[in-house]
Figure 1: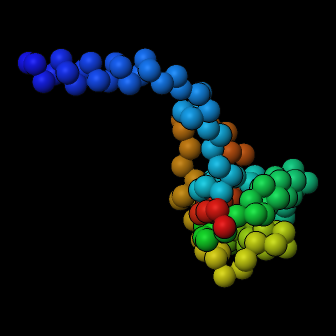
Figure 2 (figure 1 turned 45 degrees about the vertical axis):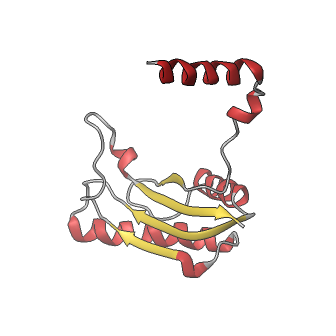
Length: 144
């Protein structure tokens, strides 16, 4: 019991004796950390919209000073069109996003492209079909 009181006294004295600066405890998250973003498509299309190009450009610029180690691009499709057509469409969507990121300066050897068709686009109950027409981009980035 005596040891516990001494330890608690030391902790209290340490806290009371040294005022902390909030910046020592709270910091902004670094930009060069793992990131995830989605790119959405029109029904039945694999071409990038202006909004998609803008999102890709912003992300590429945001991470331009980072070491891009790996980029997983997963193309998805909604349930329309049949399994074979959806697989093809999701692969083309993944390729379109990867090409746009490479054009923005990201290193091409780090890309992994996957088409999941309509089987990978599981959404929450009540989600609309447009939410399923997307490409998920998972980026492993680290400071240089």
